[in-house]
Image 1 (cartoon, one colour):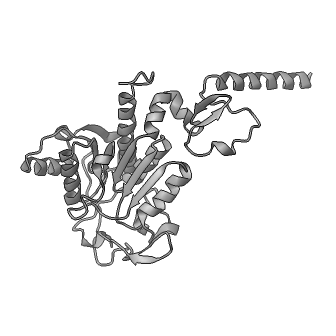
Image 2 (tube, rainbow, N blue to C red; image 1 turned 90 degrees about the vertical axis):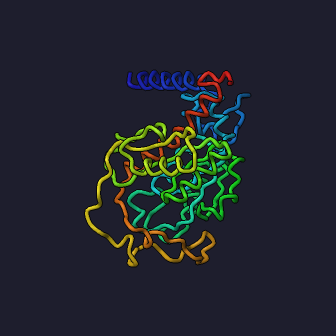
Image 3 (cartoon, rainbow, N blue to C red; image 1 turned 135 degrees about the horizontal axis):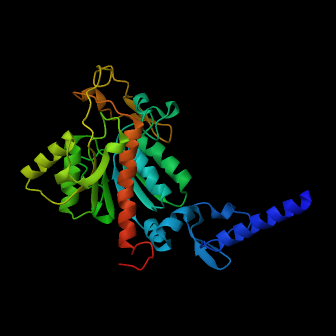
Length: 319
């Protein structure tokens, strides 16, 4: 009797597996060797093609959008508390080409909120540490690193016009404004993150027009300075409606005693000159992972949803 029950249960499970497989572009038979299915490249099984690593995305977005994501080129400026989470969300969602730009190395004070920051990675170049993780997630994705800051002297180094999306997660106001002005002048599809620090409530994070944000001092300063340059172009941003909070007390951050490393360690193990900002900042805001990660995920979501719309929606009928 017990054997009959086990046999019946096994039959039901095999039926469910077969039924579910019939709904997918790729069906992996139970017991098959799946070693060749790693990475994001398309593979053929039983005469059908698909991307097994992104099947759950495909069930939601459709095969046309998943294919479009793999062909999408994104450049992301800033891989700190906002940018690092944005980068991982993009790669896990199937973006096939991502360039990441940041001159910083990991500081022990980054560990509370930045994806690539652990005690073991302190002193290492942020973009290199993050790139290694992203390549482990999606081995066939093209991950390009720029361990430099965006400023006037480097603004022509990135070829912004070659990318489908330019994402701004820079925390320096002058560099942020420089990138926004450059990207808008080139007609790039740009999304920008406003102030994510000094806030506690991730449910107050919003997506909207830069010109209609509220309760965000950084967005207000960006608007004011863009208007001075005669720029009123539409710009979608991620911001928070939570009023920023003042830090409780002065820490070593923002002083000569800052913990940020003055020397950095490259992937080769070679010690190189670090690019440390904190000791020169007049004021350091507190920040926590739930809020900054929500900003980063929202920034990535803007790309995914725009690709979905441009690829014809879930039915994949094209523009």
